[in-house]
Amino acid sequence: MQPDGSMPENQPPAAVPIQVNPVQQPMQAQPVQPMLFGTPQQPMMAQQIMIQQNGNGMAVTGLVMGILGITCYLLGWLICFTWAVGWLFGTLAIIFGHLGQAEGNRSGTGAGQGIAGYILGYLTILGYVVPFILLGSLASL
Image (cartoon, rainbow, N blue to C red; front, side):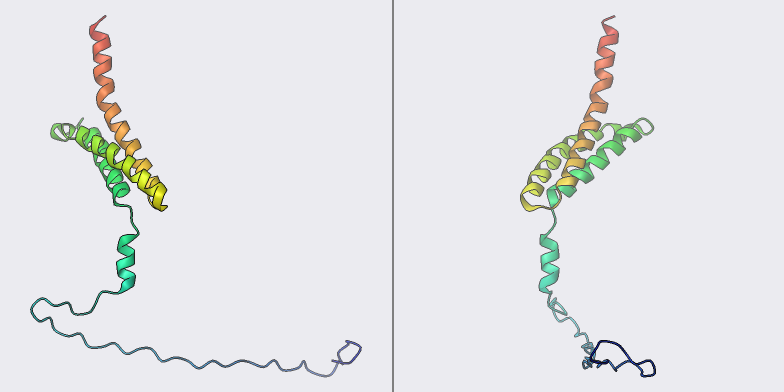
């Protein structure tokens, strides 16, 4: 480049220096030791422990109970014995869903699962209560 900022036409651009970093060799896998009297083969990593502590068990339980409740209710019209236990799953979904949402609001994880769980629980219970209300109003006519 010339002092006035222009480049001569027949000269190639200046070379750019490349920084070379040494390549690290991959770690060699250690042979697995046989288990002796129930001792673990390898120690549990701290990262694996942290993964287990980040969940919201109440919210997940509420969601699973809500799914089981609505499924048992809907299948109850085809298979009679599932209809008998759907209300129990719906009630548990409401309880665990509210507890899971409260825990999720405090910890920041799982509030949506708790909400979905108790909504499914309320829908399940509503499916059991509405037919009785309709039958009661028809009987009074």
